[in-house]
Length: 86
Image 1 (cartoon, one colour):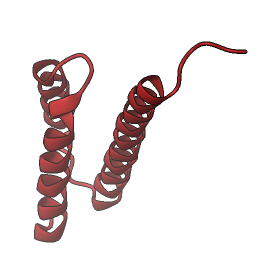
Image 2 (cartoon, helix red, strand yellow):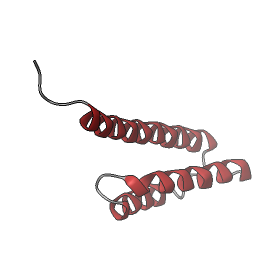
Image 3 (cartoon, one colour):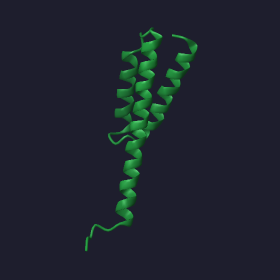
């Protein structure tokens, strides 16, 4: 694996690990699943396949961010809007 791809993979892992701290099922659950996913592909040497896997990881980051924003939105909505409908 080229050094640039290696650094991208490490950066992706760290970002996902950071985002996983607030995962609804718990940080330990997320960490174990993340580690398993990365270990499954640790022997990949094809640069194109590695780029595809990195793109998939970035997609997961976007999905997690959307999940967290939605959770924040729902919490704010519950605080400031009543459920009573006229």
